[in-house]
Structures are given as C-alpha cells and as structure tokens.
Image (cartoon, rainbow, N blue to C red; front, side, top):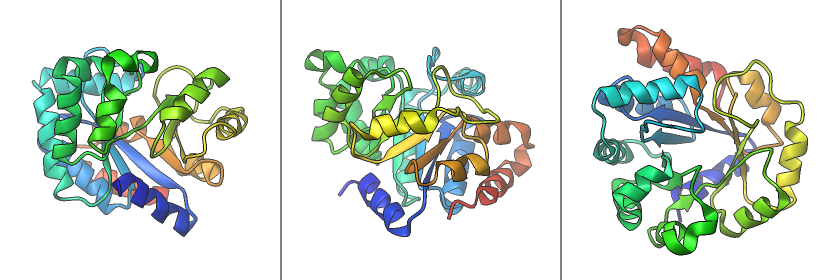
Length: 263
C-alpha cells in the first residue's frame, strides 16, 4: 500500500486532522532542507511536500517565490531534489511528495521523472499545472500509476462541476483544495465561503480533502477539523525559517509546529 494511504487511514482512525508542510528544496540551503524536513517529521507532521524550485512558480505567492529564487541562485538543480528525497526517505517514515511545475517534469522526461521519483522514495506528486486534457499525449498519469505514485489533483473555488468530474476520474490519495483563488501566502482569516466550496467538492469527489493557501495558525487548522482531512501549511513555515537566525532555525520550526498541536 502507498504510504499516503496508510497515513490517511491512521489519521482517520485517530479522528484528527492531518498536517502537510512544505519546503523549497535548497532553501535556505540543501543541508538545511534535510534538517528542516527531519524536524517536521519529529514534530508530528504527517506529510511533507518537497518543492523543486522553478523560475516562474505561477501558483506561489511572494514568500515561496523568493525562496525558489534564492534556491536557484545557490545553484540548486533538479537532481539535487532527487538526492534530498532519497536521503530523507531513508531517514523519516512519513510520506514525502514532490511538488513541481509541469515544465520541470516535461524537460526531465515524464517517465524518467516518475521512475526516478519512485526510486528516490517519493509517495506522490503534486503538479498543479499538469494539463489533464493532454494526458493522451503526455502520459503523466499513466506513468505515475505505473510507478505507484499518487497524483494529487489541485482544485480551486473556480473549479467548475465539469472540472471536478474530470479530476474525480483520476484523483487518488487525496485532493488539494486551495482555500482561495490566486497564489499561496499567509492570511489572517480564511474565506467565509470555504465550507460551501468544500461541500461542493465532496459531492463529486469521495477521497480525502487537503486544504492549503493561507493556512498560517492553529485556529485555521482547528476550523478545518471535521470539514477537511488535511491542512497544508507552506508560506507560514518558510517565514519562520526566514526570520530565524541560522543557528536557531530548526528550534524555531519545532517550536512553531509544537504550538500547532498537530496530535
């Protein structure tokens, strides 16, 4: 069984909401990426998505975009992301996922990307701009399935019923619902129409729902409990890393996560 399914079953049995966190590979550095993910796992995080830095991350807000820029400035390559995944998958037990943009997958080679991701220890792939309608030409979902990688579909409040139905046909593991239209980034309050939107998704898609974009504090996670299965936190944690001194970054991440009371 895929590690994602095992973890989802565990979360359901414990009657709690899961937490997925996000790092940009190579930010602030490759060694620190490894240490931060290990700290996340030690702090009770359920899933971690490792973003392969990209020069034009369309779905990402300022915080993650700047982290990508800094990582690329340091010379981070796609192969470094696979090396980080391989190292981490041998040292942490939780499911790890690659988050990337399709241009990266396409240039690497779709089948090779899926094969190497599986070999490195990834459990799933989040490719928000993968064109579903071009699967016949691209073969992305075919190869991901061949290598037992869950493809996490990304939905937004603007998703029509037609798009929801298309996503329902290929979705596995869980689906990632953005809490709002636009890009990632911390927000003080969640959109008041979020519950209505998630209920609309649930009418079409039966697998667990993750919610991200703007999740930045414990109250946000608590408000999602019972409505969503996973809360996704990215920008808020990158801000924690950015604002901490290099010597105290790992402690800052652990302290922040402990304050969320994941368990």
